[in-house]
Length: 210
Image (cartoon, rainbow, N blue to C red; front, side, top):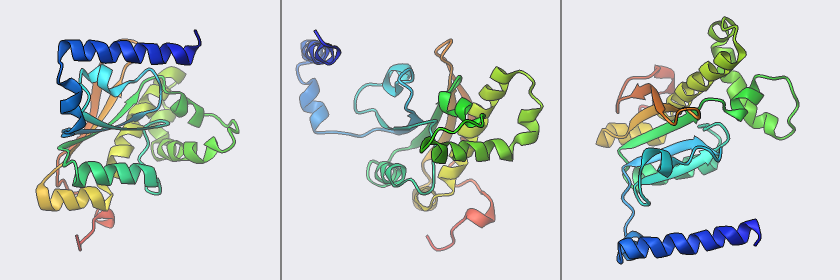
């Protein structure tokens, strides 16, 4: 049996188990999606949003990319954010990074990764913003983990800078923004940054005509 055939077999077993436990599970799920959460996470296969939060299908809307970035030119991310905030009416947006992140570690080097360089540059910018603090950390692993936390914080701030979030804050006082970091070694989530709906950010980024 090939690896992909095993996936198909596991899918059939999973679907059968769901129907056995709850005969109406898929009928109900097919007609309703009302998640309270948008999860912006890392593409790393070790950080599955549903599994580490104990949520079921339909409870959490998910977008993933390398190093859980919120980039203002990323149409994919912005489309997901627009849909989640304005159509699904999520109450919370979570940016979740993880310790020992390969993308973050790669951004700390001077290696040429080809096309990936363009994405990693966004993380390098975060390092530059916090260079004094990070350069003072002698241990390389601890420095990388701190950059993971600071990167999550910056991505939450990037969310707050979008007109999508600011308009929802102004008209509906939601969503709340959260910055979390997941620990691969212990499976625990570390909340590192929070932004309440409507909180004041730098005037430079605030829109006055929403």
